[in-house]
Length: 489
Ligand code: BG6
Image (cartoon, rainbow, N blue to C red; front, side, top):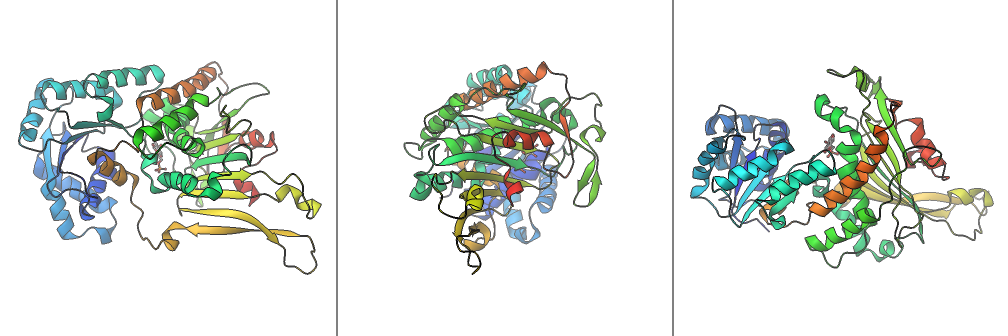
């Protein structure tokens, strides 16, 4: 279903996010016939340029970020027709008049996408309101990070809420736009085989890994202030945790899904940061090798502050205190400069209590479901079979049932997360966006851990770039008799 005609206004339109992700996503929606032919895209920034300059820059960047075989001249020309540039210094209220005039004869449906620092979200909303740019059908899209902790996030939410109702506010977590992340709902709730097993009765533990090969990519200033906990755990990992652990929603409506996610966040136990019961490990990469190339450690990156105490890796044993998940550890792990780019959820099912096969294989005889979210998207289920070797009477052999989305579903291209998200904003569907209470509970959980870390001057544990993280992360799982999935391969 295509979206209705709307005016999409991007603040920060010449910035990295807009040029690398948002404009290419809108271009792809146009190509696929999913963006109404009359929808217009307004780039707003304070740079001294005009529609022609903005269009040239955007088309040049499209050629950089969209594969060459998807850059047809006719599609590019049609996209260029949609673009307009309005120069606005976001802090200058009177400059919004130019935008108001540009929007005046346009569509009633308006999407304001804030691809800027979150500190501007409130003032921009106020200025848009005062300039008469907002109406009942306006929507606003807020990029992450939404604040630095619960208090600052609350202030931003409060400020924006003076001008937009919650039904008009779209908080982005781009992981929710990934097709494979949305598939978690289908996998869990459309397949009785999994739905019926999904609890502490049958599952021993779950791993969620979001590993990245990249470092901090020239974003030292931002990253050093945030750290991996705020940059990745507060949003992406917690969203994956919610979708993995939540109860079945009443239906697929935005609020039904969000209600269940919030219940998971409410049931999360505070994490113990120190002592024998410690449930978290902080790490920081040191010099190492990635793909055969030497890469500098975090403190040796350009612009680094040698006294920084910021983590680039976190592993947490999280616990969800409810009927479904009592006693099941959820191991969350994420880091920069790790061995491989990999986002994966591994569900370990409990073994049978009574084991009738070769006793030496008891410890390995259980099922494991691996959901590969990126790259090489797919699912594999480890199952046990009879070993067909004549010499091994009661032996078992593990093998995998595999589904590889790209090959098995015969689909060449999996859309980028921002395509899905922008499409849903234009359709006015909040399903894939984060409700205010979700973000608040997520921050509260993160804050209690950050507060404990703030008391501790010990530097994060070192791990070589190109590895799976510090030793402490292995100990975290070993303490429970578990190990990370890659150690089982
Ligand atoms: C962003 C973080 O939200 O997600 C980045 O700010 C991180 O630090 C990125 O690299 C990872 O996203 P993806 O889609 O490449 O897994």
